[in-house]
Image (cartoon, rainbow, N blue to C red; front, side, top):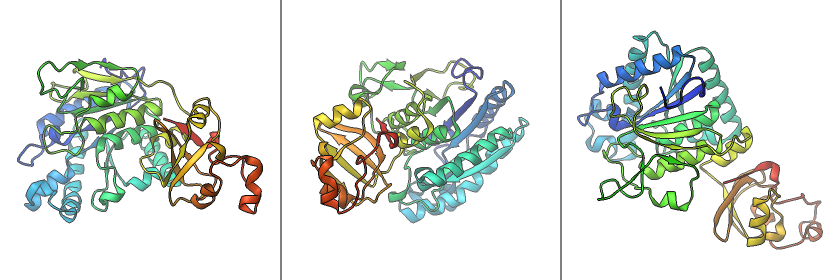
Length: 367
């Protein structure tokens, strides 16, 4: 248990990829899953609370329904496969955990459940209570109702958001790859990266978009995005091979993304958001001010994109790319009127008493 030992990591999120859980013919790799359940039981007995984000529902449902292309030929097929496969997936998890004396619980969430603040708090409260009660929550996106426009799209980022909601200290993405390489691992001379202290443009350039099995939806790009979300919430994240025997009990080869700091819960939620109603572009001076912890003033804003309302989550981008995310103090139309204007001009432009900033620092998280 050298990776995220219970003493240092009271709460752990484990993500299981489709290629590990489901055979190419569409059946569950039950013997492997039983070993994972044993690993979980050892950790729970040592005092660690664990939630599992499990892929595999669409693949399992597609096999039962006889659907082509693994159930992904159309959105309707994927939704039908998910609805069927979720029952099978939950049943298998309940069985293998019960054999270890553990109680499984199921949580199906949508993008909106974790992106809308009130629903996020409700989901976090439910998850926290389940963990306190000693259950092992098994979580998945509710693909039976999700569409391309309103879904996470991969369980890597979902696992990171769940870690944030649970206040977990660690996330393990068990996958068909043993971590990050400096280039596609299929290429000659590819070097494994065991530890990443900071995710920068160089790290992102190493990502390969492919899923090795062709069964899952998340490649290395989604895993690095998940690491960003987890690290912003103060949780470390490891990408580890699930092919090693008992991967949660042995030192499986992995890449560890180190959390830089623990962020306040609200700011972690802002930083980890996957959707934004619009974007406010700023000049270099405003970008520098934001990195120094200041609010976004209209004088430094150059362009407004999107149709957002006051209180919506917006992205803030500087000349070199994304800087922060925050809650807008104005709707898009009024924000556009204030672009580049000094604060003493705002009342006359708007016809009402203005707010102190376009996005206040208390409602903003740097990326």
